[in-house]
Image (cartoon, rainbow, N blue to C red; front, side, top):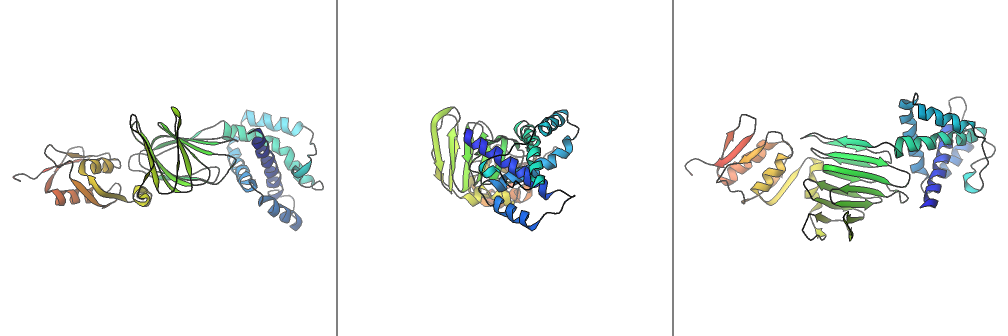
Amino acid sequence: MIDDRRKTLRQDKEAAAWFTVLNDATAEVENEDLEKFDKWIQRDGNRAAYRRIEDISSAAGALRNDTEMQAAARQALARPTQKQPGPARLSLRMPRLWGGLALAGVVAAGLVILIGGQAKTYETDVGERMTAHLDDGSTVELNTDTRLRVKFRLGERRLDLVKGQAFFNVAHDARRPFLVTAGPMEVRAVGTRFDVRHDGPGASVVLAQGKVQVRAKDVPEAAWTLSPGQELVLRPGVRAHPARVDVASLTGWTNNIITFHDVALIDAVAEMNRYERAKITLAPGAPVHAKISGLFSPGEEGEFVDAAVASFDLEVVHKPNGGVELRPRSGA
C-alpha cells in the first residue's frame, strides 16, 4: 500500500510537470517534448494522473484566495528542487519541466485539500434524474430521490449511497479501488458497470459488466463475488446469495423505462410512486396481489393507471392532493 501511494504521488508530480509545460502560454512546446509526453501518458496510470491534475487545476481557480493553498504554495516553491533518480527524472535539459516539478508540491497539497479533504454530495429530488461526472473519469446516474456522497483519496475512491438508486460506470484504476457503501452492503470494483439500490434497511446490487466483490459491513466473513447478470440482495434476517436476473429490466430506468413482469399490483404501485409526489393508492378490496406486466415511463403515472384500470376492472378517484385512488368499480 505504501509503495502504491508513493507511485501515485510520483505520477501526480510528473503529471503536474507536464501540465505546466503544455499549458505555458509564454513558451512554444517543441515536437520532441510532445513525443516524450505521448510516450509518458501511455504508461500505466499516467493518463489517470494527468486527468487528476486537470481537475485540480480547474478547481484551484475557486481557491486562489484560500489561505491554506497559498501557504502550501509558498512552502513548496521555497524548497530547492532536487534531482530524482530513475524513471521520475523526465528530462534534465528542460527547465520548464523542473519548474513544474517544483509546482508539484502545490499540487500535492491540492490533492489533500481538494480530493482527500472534501466530500461531494450529489442529490436528486422525487421524479428527478441526473448524471454525475466524477473526478476520476467515472460516471454515476442517479435515479429519483437519491443522495450520494463521494470522497476520493490517493489510495481509494469511496462513495456512500445514503438513499435511492444509482448506476455506476467505473473508470479503471487498479491502484485505487472503487468502494460503494449502501446500508448493510459494501461493493468493491475496479473498472465495471453496476447498479446499487438502497431504500429501507436493505440494499441490492446488480452487475451489468465486469466483476465486483460484495460484503456485508457488519459480518466480515460474509462476502460474494458477482459475475455479469447476477444480483445480490442484503436484507436483515434474510440469507443472501447471488441470483441470475434480467439486467436490462432492472436497470431500464436509465433509459426511462420501468419493466414489470408478473409483478403484484401493490408492488408495482410502490415502484411507480417512487417518481411522483402525488401518490397512487389502492382502496380496500382492490386486487393487491393480482399480477401486472408491461413497460411504463417513470413519472408518467397516467399510463400505468390506465393499464391497471383496464386489467382489473377498477375505477379512478382523484384526490385533493393530486393523487389517485384505484378502487373496485362500483356495482362490480
